[in-house]
Figure 1 (cartoon, one colour):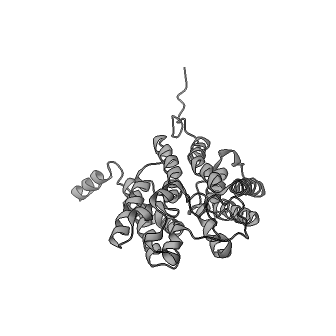
Figure 2 (cartoon, rainbow, N blue to C red; figure 1 turned 45 degrees about the vertical axis):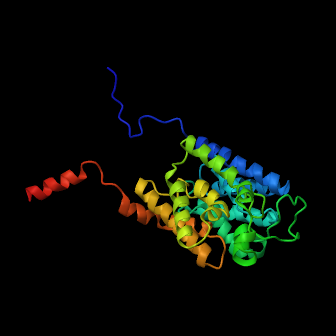
Figure 3 (cartoon, rainbow, N blue to C red; figure 1 turned 180 degrees about the vertical axis):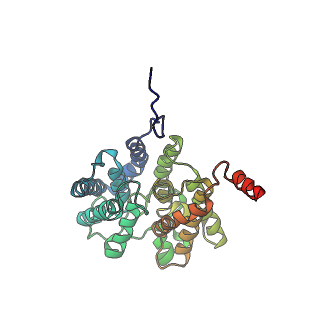
Length: 321
């Protein structure tokens, strides 16, 4: 007689694994990475390589020091390194980029338990730490196609900083320049077209839901219009596209439920436009997403749907009383 084996769920395992998902994210980021090399030259490859190597090595050594199973093979450290690199200027000192990788993996990720346990996005948090630790280096931009640029090169303005400090809206880069990325900025925030291609790939592959990026961008456009700004400029400039598709949608730090995702994305959009309009910094994507990461558990607590049958059971108890 065959024995009935009882086991806990899940009883059927899907084909998607952490490694498969991370590989899709890497593929989705490839257009932005390739565009950064075309726009900023071979040095962009150096920054990307240093960030990825720093994150992978930090994960390997930290897991070994903590005597925990190795997770380097799930490719999450590679994704973190690539995202961090795309949030840095091409002129960044490689040692600073490597330090950012250590912060992202060791401090933000592994000290909280590893993948799935961190409460804020590691790459964005590392960027914020670098922004506050090395502000001059992190805001040292070069013009597009200036392949000879180094840390000592003549700096230029990004579209957002230019709008805030230097040129008028009439002399700002046109929409085609913003779409194609032929202006100064971080490696991954210049070419909006490349980010859109990668984001659509993730949606088609069902790696991410369109709820957060669409709501985030829509909120940004509406608020930008209400404040008398140029909504299309705000959508294409800065790190908004990269943040909306690749960082606000992070599985660990974004909400699980539909309406929680909507509230999360609306909050990101509101904070971003408020920081851009009223803050001392021209960009607010990083701070907005990290702040909303922190309140995600609170949002889910109040938006969590009622379990099936719970309401009926409550009514029965009230009726019996």
